[in-house]
Image (tube, rainbow, N blue to C red; front, top):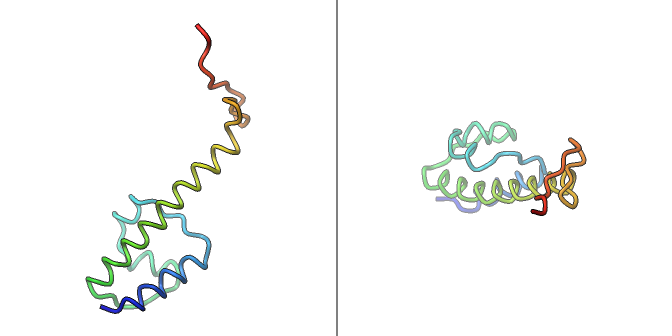
Length: 93
């Protein structure tokens, strides 16, 4: 297994700053198709593919958290959805 190759691939993907896959996308897709989307055409051994998938799953988790935080900061402020104008606060009973 070539761990250096996997690290270089992960660093390149991080440098592109357009990683938009979530965990489900990665688990359902072929790793070679994802790499092709970044212009990477290389043959990976099964061990390298597994290691790369684990690394990309970590990136996907960070993407999902950042996306949720971005959505929340833009739309929900003090319980008010400014995009749709609806109020999500629980009424006092």
